[in-house]
Amino acid sequence: MPQTQSTQYSDEYMNVTKSLNAVAVFGTSAVLLSAFKYQFVDGELPCTLCTLIRGGVILMGMGFLFNLIFGVKQRNYAVTLIGALILGAVSSRFMLIHIVPGGPATTAGVFMGMHQYTVTALGAVAAVVYTAFLMMLPVETESLSTTCIVHKAVIWLFVAMVAANAVSIIIEAGWNADITDPHAYYMISGHV
Picture 1 (cartoon, one colour):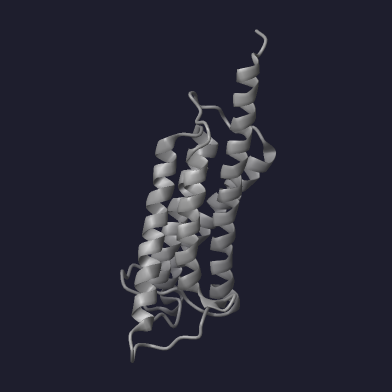
Picture 2 (cartoon, helix red, strand yellow):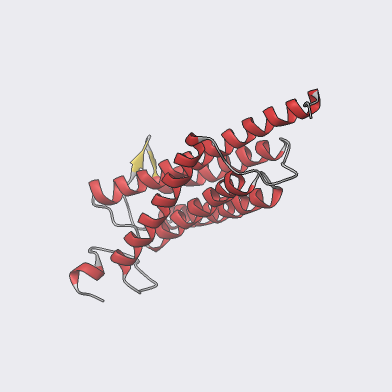
């Protein structure tokens, strides 16, 4: 059956929409990779709030990832927005801790002249705006599998980053819920 012009346009929009979701998944993977740079290269172990920030980034990425795997749906964007709200709330909390007079001074994790938590708060706002833009594009009425090799590579990169974060957190914190001021990897150093 030949495609009508409207079907052809909707297929083109779906390709653009999926590609924009792939860019977002790649972006969240890049953020997680940069967190590893600070952790392993600069020696800054993530505290509890940093781990929650990573969780917000992962949740944001999962919403975009679901759009690539299960088809573009509004509920997947809801997952992204919830992740962005968590990211924004935790980052804002982190900023408030450090602006109190007499509070702890920190110079760690400066990026473009701003602290990591300030950049992540701005990133949360940017993610909400980006997601709102994507929500204005058409959604799929049926689930189509991702066949593009680039999209599959982005999916596997994100899955690898999430798995690496899970392993890193378990090695760093063990089974402790609070790692306020980490100085060593507890599972390796015998503080289990």
